[in-house]
Length: 261
Image 1: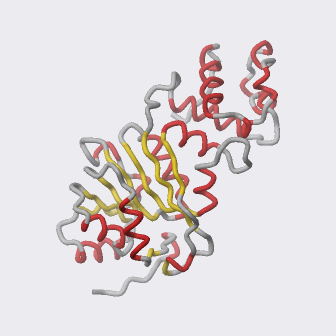
Image 2 (image 1 turned 30 degrees about the vertical axis):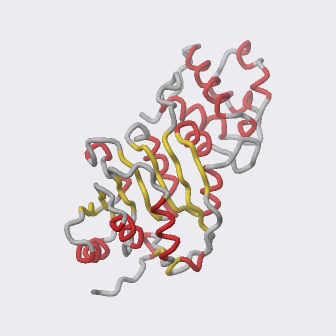
Image 3 (image 1 turned 180 degrees about the vertical axis):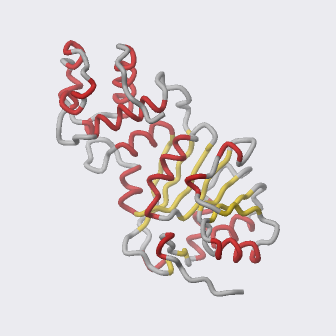
Protein backbone atom coordinates (compact mmCIF):
# COMPACT_ATOMS: atom_id res chain seq x y z
CA UNK A 1 0.00 0.00 0.00
CA UNK A 2 1.27 3.48 -0.88
CA UNK A 3 2.95 5.31 1.98
CA UNK A 4 0.93 8.34 3.06
CA UNK A 5 2.65 11.53 4.15
CA UNK A 6 0.88 14.19 6.20
CA UNK A 7 -0.12 17.41 4.47
CA UNK A 8 0.35 20.66 6.33
CA UNK A 9 -2.45 22.39 4.41
CA UNK A 10 -4.96 19.95 5.92
CA UNK A 11 -3.50 20.26 9.44
CA UNK A 12 -2.84 16.52 9.55
CA UNK A 13 -1.35 14.89 12.64
CA UNK A 14 -2.04 11.15 12.54
CA UNK A 15 -2.79 9.45 15.86
CA UNK A 16 -0.35 6.54 16.28
CA UNK A 17 -1.08 5.39 19.84
CA UNK A 18 -3.22 2.26 19.35
CA UNK A 19 -4.21 1.97 23.01
CA UNK A 20 -5.32 5.60 23.10
CA UNK A 21 -7.28 5.10 19.87
CA UNK A 22 -9.12 2.16 21.42
CA UNK A 23 -9.93 4.17 24.56
CA UNK A 24 -11.29 7.08 22.48
CA UNK A 25 -13.64 4.91 20.43
CA UNK A 26 -14.96 3.17 23.54
CA UNK A 27 -16.22 6.52 24.85
CA UNK A 28 -19.09 6.53 22.33
CA UNK A 29 -22.44 5.67 23.87
CA UNK A 30 -24.78 6.04 20.87
CA UNK A 31 -23.32 3.72 18.24
CA UNK A 32 -26.10 3.07 15.71
CA UNK A 33 -25.02 5.76 13.22
CA UNK A 34 -21.58 7.40 13.36
CA UNK A 35 -19.62 9.77 11.17
CA UNK A 36 -15.88 9.92 11.64
CA UNK A 37 -14.35 13.27 10.69
CA UNK A 38 -10.81 13.23 9.34
CA UNK A 39 -10.08 9.50 9.74
CA UNK A 40 -6.50 9.90 8.51
CA UNK A 41 -4.96 6.44 8.16
CA UNK A 42 -7.87 4.81 9.97
CA UNK A 43 -6.61 4.18 13.50
CA UNK A 44 -9.99 5.09 15.02
CA UNK A 45 -11.84 3.49 12.11
CA UNK A 46 -10.15 0.15 12.71
CA UNK A 47 -11.24 0.14 16.35
CA UNK A 48 -14.81 1.17 15.55
CA UNK A 49 -15.15 -1.66 13.03
CA UNK A 50 -13.66 -4.12 15.51
CA UNK A 51 -16.33 -3.00 17.97
CA UNK A 52 -18.93 -3.78 15.30
CA UNK A 53 -20.66 -0.40 15.01
CA UNK A 54 -23.66 -0.73 12.74
CA UNK A 55 -23.54 2.28 10.42
CA UNK A 56 -20.18 4.05 10.03
CA UNK A 57 -19.44 6.78 7.48
CA UNK A 58 -16.07 8.49 6.98
CA UNK A 59 -15.56 12.12 5.89
CA UNK A 60 -12.13 12.87 4.47
CA UNK A 61 -10.91 15.89 2.49
CA UNK A 62 -7.56 14.42 1.33
CA UNK A 63 -8.04 12.48 -1.92
CA UNK A 64 -4.91 10.42 -1.30
CA UNK A 65 -6.34 9.30 2.03
CA UNK A 66 -9.72 8.57 0.47
CA UNK A 67 -7.97 6.15 -1.91
CA UNK A 68 -5.90 4.69 0.94
CA UNK A 69 -8.94 4.18 3.17
CA UNK A 70 -11.06 2.66 0.39
CA UNK A 71 -8.37 0.02 -0.09
CA UNK A 72 -7.85 -0.59 3.61
CA UNK A 73 -11.57 -0.72 4.42
CA UNK A 74 -13.33 -2.00 1.28
CA UNK A 75 -17.09 -1.45 1.23
CA UNK A 76 -17.02 1.32 3.84
CA UNK A 77 -18.78 4.53 2.80
CA UNK A 78 -16.30 7.40 2.47
CA UNK A 79 -17.43 10.94 1.69
CA UNK A 80 -14.73 12.91 -0.10
CA UNK A 81 -14.73 16.65 0.62
CA UNK A 82 -14.77 19.39 3.22
CA UNK A 83 -16.73 18.54 6.37
CA UNK A 84 -17.78 22.20 6.65
CA UNK A 85 -19.77 21.94 3.41
CA UNK A 86 -21.31 18.53 4.13
CA UNK A 87 -25.09 18.57 4.57
CA UNK A 88 -25.68 16.63 7.78
CA UNK A 89 -29.41 16.40 7.02
CA UNK A 90 -28.64 14.11 4.08
CA UNK A 91 -26.19 11.96 6.00
CA UNK A 92 -28.48 9.72 8.07
CA UNK A 93 -32.25 9.41 8.36
CA UNK A 94 -31.97 9.07 12.14
CA UNK A 95 -29.88 10.85 14.75
CA UNK A 96 -26.16 10.15 14.86
CA UNK A 97 -22.87 10.53 16.69
CA UNK A 98 -19.58 12.13 15.63
CA UNK A 99 -16.04 11.01 16.36
CA UNK A 100 -12.72 12.26 15.06
CA UNK A 101 -9.26 13.70 15.46
CA UNK A 102 -10.19 17.13 14.13
CA UNK A 103 -7.93 19.37 12.04
CA UNK A 104 -6.99 21.89 14.70
CA UNK A 105 -7.12 24.84 12.30
CA UNK A 106 -10.89 24.44 11.74
CA UNK A 107 -11.95 22.80 15.00
CA UNK A 108 -14.00 25.79 16.21
CA UNK A 109 -15.83 25.96 12.88
CA UNK A 110 -16.69 22.29 13.18
CA UNK A 111 -18.07 22.84 16.69
CA UNK A 112 -20.31 25.64 15.39
CA UNK A 113 -21.50 23.29 12.63
CA UNK A 114 -22.31 20.65 15.24
CA UNK A 115 -24.30 23.22 17.21
CA UNK A 116 -26.22 24.19 14.08
CA UNK A 117 -27.21 20.51 13.83
CA UNK A 118 -27.58 19.87 17.56
CA UNK A 119 -30.99 18.20 17.28
CA UNK A 120 -29.57 15.50 14.98
CA UNK A 121 -26.26 14.95 16.77
CA UNK A 122 -26.69 12.88 19.93
CA UNK A 123 -23.04 12.82 20.91
CA UNK A 124 -19.54 13.75 19.81
CA UNK A 125 -16.11 12.48 20.84
CA UNK A 126 -13.40 14.64 19.32
CA UNK A 127 -9.69 15.33 19.70
CA UNK A 128 -8.79 19.02 19.89
CA UNK A 129 -5.93 21.30 20.79
CA UNK A 130 -5.83 21.36 24.60
CA UNK A 131 -6.44 25.12 24.91
CA UNK A 132 -9.49 24.97 22.63
CA UNK A 133 -10.89 21.92 24.42
CA UNK A 134 -10.45 23.60 27.81
CA UNK A 135 -12.15 26.72 26.49
CA UNK A 136 -15.17 24.76 25.31
CA UNK A 137 -15.48 22.95 28.65
CA UNK A 138 -14.60 25.96 30.81
CA UNK A 139 -16.69 26.93 33.82
CA UNK A 140 -17.86 30.50 34.35
CA UNK A 141 -15.63 32.98 36.19
CA UNK A 142 -12.59 31.84 34.19
CA UNK A 143 -10.74 33.71 31.46
CA UNK A 144 -11.15 30.67 29.19
CA UNK A 145 -14.96 30.93 29.46
CA UNK A 146 -16.41 32.31 26.25
CA UNK A 147 -18.87 31.99 23.38
CA UNK A 148 -18.13 28.33 22.62
CA UNK A 149 -18.28 27.46 26.33
CA UNK A 150 -21.79 28.90 26.69
CA UNK A 151 -23.25 27.63 23.43
CA UNK A 152 -21.85 24.10 23.64
CA UNK A 153 -22.64 23.58 27.32
CA UNK A 154 -26.18 24.90 26.88
CA UNK A 155 -26.97 21.94 24.63
CA UNK A 156 -24.47 19.24 25.64
CA UNK A 157 -23.17 17.66 28.85
CA UNK A 158 -19.39 17.85 28.57
CA UNK A 159 -16.37 15.97 29.87
CA UNK A 160 -12.67 16.51 29.18
CA UNK A 161 -9.85 13.97 29.01
CA UNK A 162 -6.40 14.22 30.50
CA UNK A 163 -3.69 16.00 28.49
CA UNK A 164 -2.46 14.06 25.46
CA UNK A 165 1.17 14.71 24.54
CA UNK A 166 2.46 15.40 21.00
CA UNK A 167 4.43 12.13 20.84
CA UNK A 168 1.13 10.28 20.33
CA UNK A 169 0.94 11.71 16.80
CA UNK A 170 2.89 11.62 13.56
CA UNK A 171 4.06 14.24 12.88
CA UNK A 172 3.90 15.55 16.48
CA UNK A 173 1.92 18.80 16.76
CA UNK A 174 3.45 21.74 18.60
CA UNK A 175 0.63 21.71 21.13
CA UNK A 176 -0.88 19.32 23.65
CA UNK A 177 -4.28 17.80 22.93
CA UNK A 178 -7.42 16.69 24.77
CA UNK A 179 -10.51 14.66 23.95
CA UNK A 180 -13.95 16.17 24.51
CA UNK A 181 -16.92 13.88 25.10
CA UNK A 182 -20.28 15.62 24.69
CA UNK A 183 -23.75 14.09 25.08
CA UNK A 184 -26.91 15.92 24.05
CA UNK A 185 -28.89 17.14 27.06
CA UNK A 186 -32.60 17.90 27.46
CA UNK A 187 -32.42 21.55 26.32
CA UNK A 188 -34.48 21.21 23.16
CA UNK A 189 -36.28 24.55 23.50
CA UNK A 190 -34.67 27.20 25.72
CA UNK A 191 -37.35 29.76 24.90
CA UNK A 192 -35.44 31.64 22.22
CA UNK A 193 -34.24 30.69 18.74
CA UNK A 194 -30.68 29.42 18.52
CA UNK A 195 -29.45 32.06 16.05
CA UNK A 196 -30.73 34.93 18.18
CA UNK A 197 -29.32 33.30 21.33
CA UNK A 198 -25.92 32.89 19.65
CA UNK A 199 -25.93 36.52 18.51
CA UNK A 200 -26.70 37.84 21.99
CA UNK A 201 -24.01 35.65 23.58
CA UNK A 202 -21.48 36.91 21.01
CA UNK A 203 -22.45 40.49 21.80
CA UNK A 204 -21.94 39.85 25.51
CA UNK A 205 -18.38 38.63 24.94
CA UNK A 206 -17.31 41.17 22.32
CA UNK A 207 -15.69 43.36 25.01
CA UNK A 208 -14.71 40.90 27.72
CA UNK A 209 -13.33 43.51 30.13
CA UNK A 210 -16.44 45.63 30.01
CA UNK A 211 -19.68 45.12 31.90
CA UNK A 212 -22.71 43.88 30.00
CA UNK A 213 -24.13 47.38 30.25
CA UNK A 214 -21.30 48.59 28.02
CA UNK A 215 -20.91 45.46 25.89
CA UNK A 216 -24.57 45.54 24.88
CA UNK A 217 -24.74 49.30 24.30
CA UNK A 218 -25.05 48.74 20.56
CA UNK A 219 -28.41 47.03 21.13
CA UNK A 220 -29.92 50.28 22.50
CA UNK A 221 -31.73 48.47 25.29
CA UNK A 222 -34.11 50.47 27.54
CA UNK A 223 -32.39 52.05 30.55
CA UNK A 224 -34.92 50.58 32.96
CA UNK A 225 -33.90 47.14 31.72
CA UNK A 226 -30.11 47.70 31.79
CA UNK A 227 -30.32 49.14 35.31
CA UNK A 228 -30.76 45.63 36.74
CA UNK A 229 -27.79 44.12 38.62
CA UNK A 230 -26.88 41.58 35.96
CA UNK A 231 -25.69 44.37 33.66
CA UNK A 232 -22.99 45.31 36.15
CA UNK A 233 -21.36 41.90 35.56
CA UNK A 234 -18.92 40.91 32.84
CA UNK A 235 -19.88 38.11 30.45
CA UNK A 236 -17.45 35.61 32.00
CA UNK A 237 -19.27 36.01 35.35
CA UNK A 238 -22.60 34.74 34.00
CA UNK A 239 -23.76 31.14 34.37
CA UNK A 240 -25.50 29.35 31.49
CA UNK A 241 -28.95 30.04 32.93
CA UNK A 242 -28.07 33.73 33.21
CA UNK A 243 -27.36 33.87 29.47
CA UNK A 244 -30.62 32.07 28.71
CA UNK A 245 -32.61 34.41 30.97
CA UNK A 246 -30.92 37.52 29.55
CA UNK A 247 -31.49 36.43 25.96
CA UNK A 248 -35.16 35.66 26.61
CA UNK A 249 -35.67 39.03 28.28
CA UNK A 250 -34.09 40.85 25.35
CA UNK A 251 -36.37 38.88 23.07
CA UNK A 252 -39.40 39.77 25.18
CA UNK A 253 -38.92 43.48 24.78
CA UNK A 254 -38.99 42.87 21.05
CA UNK A 255 -35.61 44.43 20.47
CA UNK A 256 -34.26 43.83 16.99
CA UNK A 257 -31.15 41.67 17.15
CA UNK A 258 -29.45 40.81 13.92
CA UNK A 259 -28.69 37.14 13.33
CA UNK A 260 -26.50 35.43 10.81
CA UNK A 261 -29.47 33.98 9.01
